[in-house]
Image (tube, rainbow, N blue to C red; front, side, top):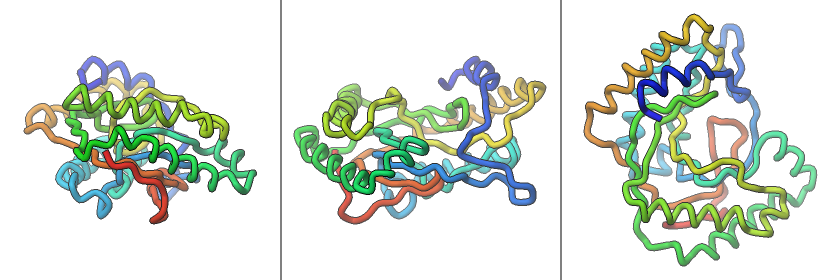
Amino acid sequence: MTLPETYRSQVQHIQESPKYELHPGKGLEALPFPGYTIITPPGGEDDAENQGLFTFLEGFQQQLVQHLGSEVFAPVPSSSFHITLADLIWNGSFRHATEDASFEVQLRDRIQQIFQECEPLSEGKPIRFQALGLMVMTRALAICLAPVEEYSYERILKFRRAIYQNRGLIGLGIEQQYYFTPHITLGYFGTAPSTEQRPQLGEIFVNLNQQWLDREPQMYSVSRAELRKFDDMTRYYREPDWAVFKF
């Protein structure tokens, strides 16, 4: 995912994200995109342990804005930096599900039960990931991560399996839709670059990624998973009694 050839190929597939919209005079603004997810504690006060990496990512975001322009790339707030451990429900599916007034309570209760059942996976030691470099996705830019130990990776896969194979959660209409590709989203594409701009964009990504190759390995420590709600892609929040799982 971080090879120059991948960047040069992937830029041909870039599309505008439905999560952002360009407003004349205001730039790119996040659109409503509500749902629930299971993530690592987002950046800022909720995750002081990884603050060094978050600070570096903030600077890297600004470089992306400078090179791509604020109409092409919409950076997410650094306070939202996280790894998605398990997507749950979002946007149209969420709006439809919440026509049942009890849906959110049922979802939160079910996740609480799943986390309790996952206690045998809790070992009291964090799972470490190494930040490998820039990852160009169809509608977003992210930092690609790789687990340091294969055993740790297996722990997360078992955790995800416990979630997606839970009959109660399946009964709420929630199913696995993505494989686990650990990453931290930096921002989304607003206006897609023109066909003529894309080859140059590929070279920009190759050059920007060089700084990841030239520096000491950056680590990301995952010590817990949390159920969080979002209204758009800029903020992930929770109530104090919502489910938390400690690795």
